[in-house]
Length: 414
Image 1 (cartoon, rainbow, N blue to C red):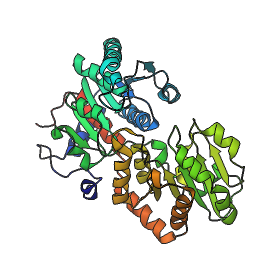
Image 2 (image 1 turned 180 degrees about the horizontal axis):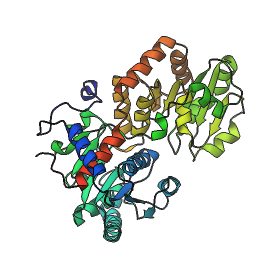
Image 3 (image 1 turned 45 degrees about the vertical axis):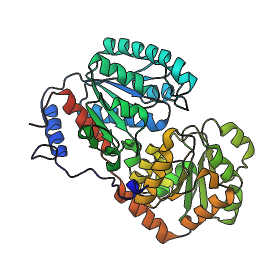
């Protein structure tokens, strides 16, 4: 893990073959795009599976709409993933293709005999979609759907941008990087993982604009709990969009005792959609507990929180940084290629996050970690300041400007 200890969340200061900084060049391109008549920019997004892949794509699309109000978008996803509801709810056109999930282990019979057939079918359907929509650029933000869509873009010769949220890229994005025009990464350390490093741009991760609304803590708490007065301490528990049984079980055994012994403590608990019915039947109601399968007003939950207990998905980690929150991270051991463990280690280095491995997690360990932080105001302030310093909150704007530059045929190296 030595690579993480020395990594930085900020873009490299090395100039890119020009006396102007890359950001300055992008601003110039963006200003030219604004002053010139906006053409009908057409963008395909490939995103699916989890919120960590879907919401960055939405954030980029929202920013592109600001830069180019005439832009047209099409999101490609799977019919059964959460993108099938999340994308239309965000107001964007959506179409479906077969997913091509990679099984573990890599040399499994399914990967050798079944996956090629599914992948071929998905690529051909994507080629048809690209032919009909005729995009200027395809943007892949991850999920099983991203690989065949981006591969189809490469075959068709459409400009391609991939956005890697994790500290270390997976196999799919490493392969796609060979065909991509640009690779947007969240961390400086990620650049070293790619074979063609000159394609990489360190932008940070796009976070939802609503997280930057600066809602007061008091107003945010009142959204979940009525008639709350005075200073309160609130713990936000996030198991990811689909849930985390290990976190739910550990919290279930201590939440009521913690609330009973600390009258200033409040808990917002997102169980995940797959676990909610079971947890709702087991959890005792309490006036200072808010239980939900999924937090649609997650921006208010972040604003209300003093401490976040969460998995270590890339986007959740970056949202923690962007909102400047102390955190306890419990990386999932089930995520491919150890992404969450690597993300959690990086968060520990840059933001002081406490990391509890799942095989070490039990109710007593979780309660002790929560109380050691929530009862120590100096530690809370230190962790908050470190998280805020590590954040880079203009990723959506930088990526959107990069998309404009790639689709307006401006030579940034001249």
